[in-house]
Length: 465
Ligand SMILES: Cc1cc2nc3c(=O)[nH]c(=O)nc-3n(C[C@H](O)[C@H](O)[C@H](O)COP(=O)(O)OP(=O)(O)OC[C@H]3O[C@@H](n4cnc5c(N)ncnc54)[C@H](O)[C@@H]3O)c2cc1C
Ligand code: SF4
Image (tube, rainbow, N blue to C red; front, top):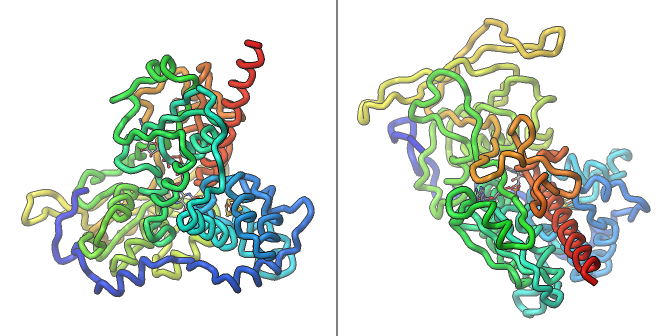
C-alpha cells in the first residue's frame, strides 16, 4: 500500500499500552460463574426461534442447558457438530441480527440470552481441554479411500474439509495465501479475534486427521480445475471474493488511497501495531462490515478524525445497527447520503507522487422510482488516507466460465452447493447463495456441500453393489 509518512501520516501515534488496550478482546470471555448464571436465564424454548435464525442450526437451547448443568464437553459437541468453526462464529457473528436477534426476551424488553458469549465459553473450554488432555471431541471414521480437493482454506473450505474428514474421506486443501483461515485470518477485526485464535482454530480443525493443506497454491496459477477434476473424486471451491470494486472517481490512484481489506489484512498480520502508519484524517467510503472495521481500527491506531461516508441512509447499510452504534461510540463519524466525486490530491514533496489530501462528495437522495441521484450540492472532507470499502468481487481466473452466473459475478450453485459441472461444488462468498456474506453462512455452505458430496459417494457405492 502506498502511504508516504509525513506530518499527517505516522506510525506509533499512541503509546504501546494504549494500543494494547485498544486492540484487546472486545468481548472478553465469561467467567465460569457468569456463564452458568446466563445459561439459567434461557427458557429453553421448544422450536426455539434462535435455532431457526442461526444459519448453521446449532441446537442452542440444548447446548445452553448443558452449560447450565456443567456439561461443557456436551455443549461443545452440540455446537461443533453443527458448526465446526463455532469458536470463530461465537466471536464474529452479528448475533444481533441472527440468534440473539430472534431470542424471545427481545419481546419482553429484556436483554436476549448472550448466546454468542455462551458458545464461546463452551468452545474455548473444549479447545483448552483437548490441548491439555489430548482427548479429541471427534474421531474420524475409517478411511473410505475417497479423496476430495478443497480450494480455499476460508470458513467455507475448512467446514467442508472437516465434515468430509469426519466421515472418513481424505481431503487436500489448496490455498493461495501463506496462512489458512481466509478472512478469519486476514479480515475479521483484530479486537474480535485476539491471541492468534484463527490459527489455533484451524489447528484444532485439522487435528481431526485426513486433511492435507497446501498453502501458496493458487487455482488458475499453480493448479487447474481440469486437473483437480481428473485427480480427485470431487472438488469444492471456497475461494471467497478476492477482487475489489473500483471507486470510479478521479484521483483513485493517488498515494494514500487504499483498499480497506488490504489495510485490515496488513493490520491483522502485524506483530507490532506501533509500526503501522495511520493517517490523522481518514475517510472510509462504504457502508458494510469492512467499512466499519477499517474505520474503527483506524481510530484504535490513533487517527484523529475518521469519517465513514455512505451513499445511502443507515437503514440501507449492510453493517448492522450494533456495528454502527459501536463505530460511533469508538469516535467514528458516520455521514449518510453522499457519494465521492473525486479524491483531491497534493504533490508529495519527497516522492513526486500525488498524495490524497481530501475527498469531494456530492450529497444524494432517491428519486420517485427509488433510484439514487446526486443533488448537485458538494462538500469536502480532509483526508490523508482514503480507505475504499465498497465491496469485493470474485476473481474468476482458473474457474470454468460455465460455472459463473450469467452476469459473471459469482459461481452459480444449487441449494446443496452443486455447480453446473459434475463433481464440482462451491460455497461461501464466491457463490450466488441467497444469504448475507458472513462467516457462519460460509461454514453452513461448506457443511452442506460436504454432506451432498458424502451422499453422492454413497450413491456411487450403492450402484456398484
Ligand atoms: C474486512 C472484513 C471483515 C469481516 N468481518 C466479519 C465479521 O465480523 N463477521 C462475519 O460473520 N463476517 C465478516 N466478514 C465476512 C466473512 O469474513 C466472509 O463472509 C467469510 O470469510 C467468507 O468465507 P469464505 O470461505 O467464503 O471466503 P474467504 O474467507 O474469503 O476465504 C477464501 C479463501 O480462498 C483462498 N483463495 C482465493 N482465491 C484462490 C485461488 N484462486 N486459489 C486458491 N485459493 C484461493 C483465499 O486465500 C482464502 O483463504 C468480513 C469480511 C471482511 C472483508
Ligand atoms: S453460530 Fe453464530 S448465529 Fe449461530 S448460534 Fe452461534 S453465534 Fe448465533
